[in-house]
Image 1 (tube, helix red, strand yellow):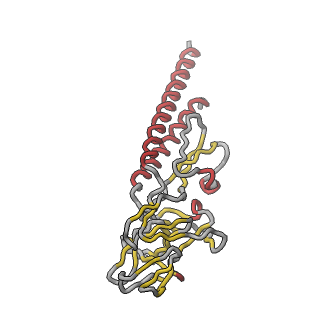
Image 2: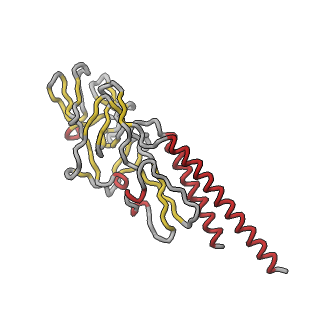
Image 3: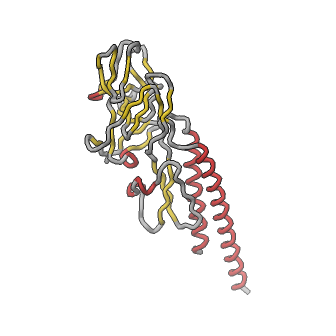
Length: 257
């Protein structure tokens, strides 16, 4: 294949991948604690794979790149940088200032991890996610309280009722969330990969903010601006592909005369 044509087609494929990523980010922009996906571009000749990309090679929130001159390979990775923390006034709304994750037990019994602190109290006395996954405390035991009157959650994650500590949030840390976690079918929640490394030491203490929620770390305005840039890059690659094709046709026609 003509090198220029290969480059153009590779660029168009990369732009398509990035467009799909941006569209997915926009649909999840209102999920508290959502982690946006970002597209990493590496040389097609490097042999890199999603597993070998470091979190620094992917970029941070709002750090986008649009490539017009491949050949490149496009990989999607989750960006785990901190989102903005906004007040709600609801003590069962919680945000984590730090790198940890709330630990929840799904109805299936599986353990998941999330930054979405939109919790509620149910009639069984459990603190759960909006769809019923149980918030876990020390020892992965569900947090159970008889009433929310007098309930407080301090910045260390201690859950107290009328001044008496009854549990402490199980906040889980991972060595590299970008490779240790994978998204589940439930928005804003993650499961461990087979090679995940859970950290028990060596991380900065988290601060639990009761009465607050962490926003998605994907800015919709930035996403829309990037979408326009990607569309322009796609069109540029498309024109280059057409130009290369036209040149090839002229060459064939000339050679045949």
